[in-house]
Length: 273
Image 1 (tube, one colour):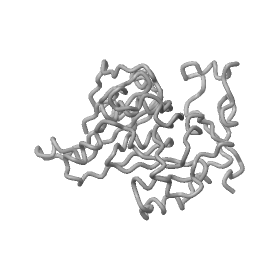
Image 2: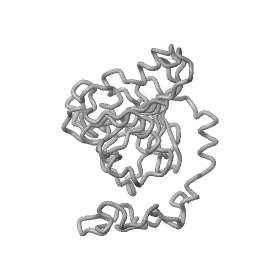
Image 3: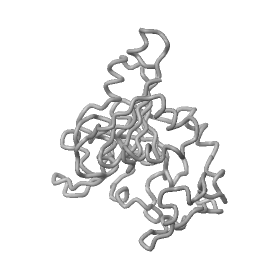
Image 4: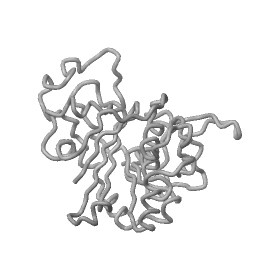
């Protein structure tokens, strides 16, 4: 295992893990490449909190990998799709085209949501953004439920991987947000993201005509039910965390009704019922 964490933009860090077979030939052809992009995580923060990591996970990547301590992409607009696409393509926003989560299109005279594409609707009916409950204002600007990477103007690492393997590589981008998954999957991969309206992972007709059985089976397990009546708890005592003694600040908001302090209780009512 050779890892290279983290490369950072101004807004997010990325962990790249390359899993190699034992043969000398395979050293140039990794069996698995895992890219984990963490929005708003500066590249130094994993090391600041290293002592709180359990065995495996990020600790394993950091212990067994190679760390580039001064790797940067220089761009000013620190929004999700800007940083994610920069990390996915290696290009700056002026080249890859994802200059913001939203931009004004002079040709159409309206505001554009970055990965919206009316030509490729979601495969799940009713899985679009619910304007009454959505907490992400940028997604509300989309004029349709369609999504695709068509607005990304440059090639991405995933594209090059597909080309290098003559289409044999299986490339997937998975995220809570549509823009996170679409940017990571590039133009040749498959993207899935979580629909809060449908309570399941969805994709658009850009990627599939219908869901593969393994996606349908996963969604049918309805993992959301496991969280009803539970809460987001801290693993360690709160006073062991940096700024743990400042858990409740006047400027904090009660985002989505989860409260301002730990533990953050989840709903006891299924929002989809």
